[in-house]
Length: 603
Ligand code: F6R
Image (cartoon, rainbow, N blue to C red; front, side, top):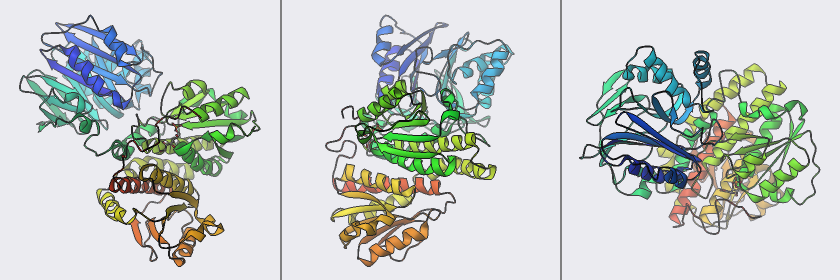
């Protein structure tokens, strides 16, 4: 996810901006840039790749004495990672940096282009600076022009804008993406997308709320919401950087679990409208030549792919199968050019998945990557890519990458259904409603977290866990078991509920823990009978369901959702927190579990 820093004051601006961007490196980025306004002149530098490249480019630049500046690290969403697409973006006399996604950028861009404005980048962000300057040319002052620009934007944003028209001011706005203002006793003002760049510089901060915007000068902060001025409430800033990078959470994994609502909003942004799914990224794929799908992936990505096989067959009415990439590679598979080959990978560098992709390419198949890292090996090799937009995932145990993969695959199944005319209007409306409801389902409920924390103490031993579920809840059971074993080191397996009686039930006794996923919208009664069979053998049962269940030893109640995918995401969060709390009680290193690596680049 992109990072933002800003500064107003007398000190060397480059130093704060580059140090600040360094602190934001952990969020992931593919390019970086700064712009400094001093004595009525704006100097701007951008570089692709590591920050070192920007440091190198700005080596002979200095900016001591009063002035202002802003810096940005970009994680590509619209437009490839290139220097031209890096921020700041410039107009004639102003520069902008932006985190998030402007959903209605196409419409704004077309209007501006019709007025003769030339765009230099492929980004959505560039519209902001041109729209702002257009308002100025039409006679508005900079404050009015900024306000009018913000009013036009739909989507998620944290924005900083500087202009020669107001050389002592930084304009800012925030919606659904974090932005913090800071200050110190020397009269310096700071802006940042997270606490960590501010530590050691600002002494107090204000965390902006959605919809807030305004402008900052050396001696003044003007803050508004809905056109009404508000007084910023500052609070003292802590001094622990790692703590700040974790936004106050105990572990990156925990932070990433809590981030899922926000990142899934980003996954959806610009891809869903009231009536259909728009996936512009798929232009390169000729769907008229496709009559089946083969998915290949490893680990958690395999689990999202397995869940997607149900969605593709049910919604898009297309044959779909999945294989674990390391198995696929050596089985001498029969490859058919009319099969779309989909690879799923968080990192885009997993060796087995990459090799499977190469085999498909060699066989002349059309290939599509579902990936979190633009410009990764898998993205570069595929014919088309749908980026999952989860931002960098630091916890080794994957959480938000899985959630965003699931949403991307669900979007793809609907898109294909639309294309193949296999989904009627009513179903499409229903699916879109459920898709757009997903970010709110992904908000972690504090009471549920606390309940899981308390009951986790009863699950620190035993001779194993079985996570069970049916249909898409079977891959979720596999994923729940994988999370638990990765960070707790306890033995856990995922099983289809209906398979337990074909062997595994022999293990059932009071020391066998069964985590039963019992959604109300997907084969509830069938799963219930399977759980009853286990209960009759005295297995200890933890039920996750919206419906009370008498035979459960422990029960986590989910909310009353009307779509199975919404139940899926709510149960996903519960299984993630369950694994986390057990690992914490066992004293394990949650973010870096033993024997595991984040990116598996060897076979
Ligand atoms: C589990 C986990 C791994 C990865 C697997 C594939 O929490 O992170 O199972 O899912 O190594 O990695 P990617 O998705 O990067 O190809």
